[in-house]
Every structure is written in structure tokens, then in C-alpha cells.
Length: 326
Image 1: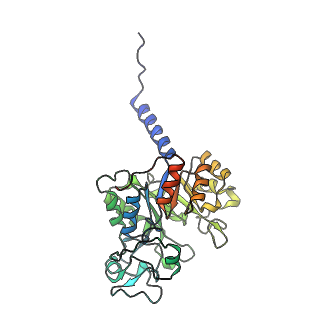
Image 2 (image 1 turned 60 degrees about the horizontal axis):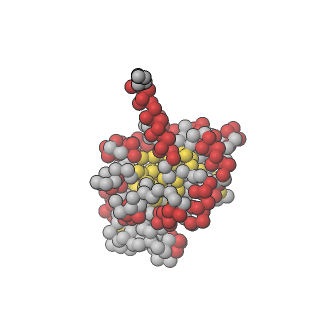
Image 3 (image 1 turned 135 degrees about the vertical axis):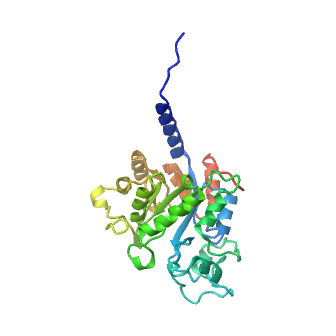
């Protein structure tokens, strides 16, 4: 009779961790951009509830700090006149104040969200958006609370730390916003269910030092009107000339995920990223034909304003769908 092979406990733990890691990399990650911007007003609790009801793996969202240091879920550094009304329901006449100049309480009490200004570019771009006039600018803690409701244990968040190295006066120092976000994550107990992402790679480098267990997703763009990789300003000094490719830049910076503009991708770049151990999650993919092509190329997920469209493409490609209506 052969004796069973006995492995040390430490080795068993390592093997299990490797198996878990492999499964995580293989899973397709459907992310609702700013909640589900194509279906509900962006970065509102209504948008996140819509994304959850449609069925996503991950809620993608943006964070700025209020004047009193509270992480608030909002994309622009100042209140957008085409998304914001005052307490009386009147549209802002001009761009509103910087998020960092107003307290969290005032942001929630003095301003209303929930719909796009009629005939604005936002309203024209997203005609399927369903208004929700009771919405206020949410705190990060309020979005994380949605993740903690029963039945949503697998739901994740991808939190973009909003900074612009070319406009340093619009936002706090990178370390300040990273520390504030990490404190909220700790208080909510969801550190293992989040990713931190950003175009300003300084914040991601700081996050890796302060919270090395939280994966970082490195955003990039190489568009004529938005280039974040050419001179090192956005990319914390990492540059293409030195490293030769964006996947190699992300790997050198310590990232786990590369999130490029989907127009910047090719099968060769995806294969290179995978060979380096990176996941590839492009943004913002809204047309079914683009989704199908990228899935065929082997991306690890999609960030989209229309998770409903993405689910149909995923079903056609025989990909497992995240649960809907949680």
C-alpha cells in the first residue's frame, strides 16, 4: 500500500493561492462606467443601483476630495453646469465651484443632480438616460454601502483617483486623496473588493506603498486630444522611450492591470500585457461591434456606459454573466 504524499501546510497554502490567482485572472470583468452612464445619471446612487440591477461585476466610479477631506463620487474637479442644479432646481449658469472648495455637507445640500441639461452634449450623447431628480452628489462611503447589502458579496468597485498633474491647484496632493480613500475603504471593510485606478500614476505608486494588497489599474490614453504617456507628466516619469511599450511601462510601475483607451489596443499589445502578467481592461467601450472584437482579442474585461449591451455580447460569446438584480 502506497503512503499518501504529505505536503507542508505552507506549500498547500501557496498552491491554493496560485490557483485562486489564476482563476481571478481568467474571469471576465464587466464594469459599469460611472455606474451605468448610458442608462442613468453618471456617478449617482441611481446609476450604481441601475448597474447592479442590470448585472455587473464591478462598479467603476470617480473620486475627488471635498474641502473637509471627504471622498466624493464625481468626475470633474468642479461641478459641471450641464449636470448640476441649485437647491431650487435651477441649472447652474456657469461651471460650479471646485469640489475641493466646498464641504461634503454643502455639496449634498446645496446642489442637485439626477438629469442632464436638456439639449446639452451630455443629454444628446446619452438619450437613454433615465432621470432621477432626487439624487445628490454621493460620498464614496454611500456607494460602498451598496456593495455591503446582502447578496452582493461578489460585487467590486474600481475607484478612479481623480488628479491632473497639469492643474495642481484644482485638486489636493496625491498622497492626501489616496490616504482619504484608503481610510474610507478600511472603515467599510471592502479593501479586498476594490481596485484603485488613475491616469495620474503618482497616486497609484503611493497606493502601492500604503496598501500593497489593493490592485492598481493604470489608465492610459494616446489620443490626439488626450495623451497621457508621451512625456512622463501623467505617468510619474515613466516613458515609452525608456520602456518600449505601454505594457512594459505599467509592469515597471508596479501595476496589476492596464486600462487603455480601447482605440489604442491591438492583439499584439494584449498578448504582450498578458505575457507580463497584466490584465487588460479597456475603456470606454460602448458599441457592440467593438465589444465583440475586443473579446475575440482576449481582453480581461470591459468598462462601458452600457452594461446591458455588453451582457448581450458576452452571452453571444458564451461568457459567464454576472448576476443581475442583486
